[in-house]
Length: 82
Image (cartoon, rainbow, N blue to C red; front, side, top):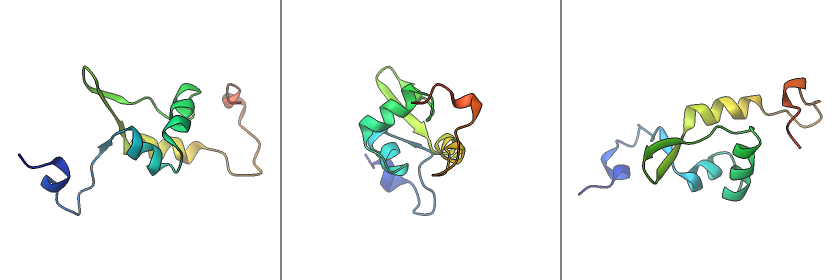
């Protein structure tokens, strides 16, 4: 059986990625990703099967775009962030 990475053409990146890849994609550790999901700074993963989850890279992009830049004040809607 061919692995999903080999089955995809090189020009078509996977849309859903696992925890380690999602963390690497946003440049944090997996534990930091977990905390960011918990406090709402990153999206929850999608459920693929009973014990299999993955993050949608499009959703990660949207959440990353909403992160404040250094020196910017947090938006009022982000009161839950610590």
